[in-house]
Length: 279
Image 1 (cartoon, rainbow, N blue to C red):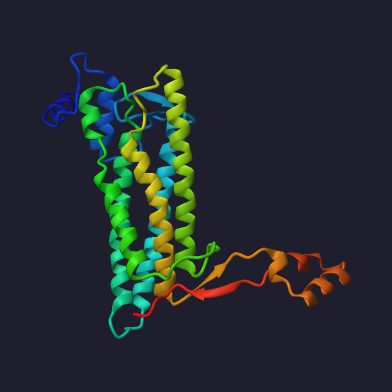
Image 2 (cartoon, rainbow, N blue to C red):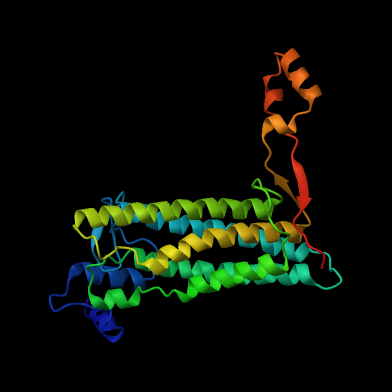
């Protein structure tokens, strides 16, 4: 116990004069070599400040969505790494360079998602030392915007239609990431509203604006690199069209006359166009 307190003091982790047991357990969790702690066996888990809440609390719904997003990004990153190894050397080497760049950016984002998790797990009423350790900077959102602008202005054809998720295994997995990111954003908003209602707090938001801006912009980035991945794979994008517009008169007649094949009336003839601009 004394060893844990000494570690916390050296790192300014904040054991108070009463040696608060929650803080000690939290530090033990960070520095213990064991994967399991048994502290959550009764259905509660600790926040960054040592406070314990039930595992179905909205704060853990938000944390879970962010964690799921990082895991999905890991899957997409592995797809990209395999793709990078299998790329035939093009004349300029641009495709491999693009793949390596996106891989590096995804890893940076996964690290930032851990920082966001710390921010989510630090309620606004936490002690100042916890607040400082979980701050999130708007620089990261600006960086995302710069990445999106770079890809959009230099590597992608203008987008004039809605596109359907897919286009290749890597691209499809990144569209899943985008959807999970959007869900994470909704969970964060719900969490903030609930916490503010509970605390009668209308001014001091539970989730800071930089975090919300980052998550909102992240879904735009993921959409963009899904298209970039399609480019790297040399794929084509499927464009949304209304079913009535994509069916030929012949197909319409067939769908009416063939009552045993009801799926015909839902068939779509999807336009295709390349995501790739001339290199």
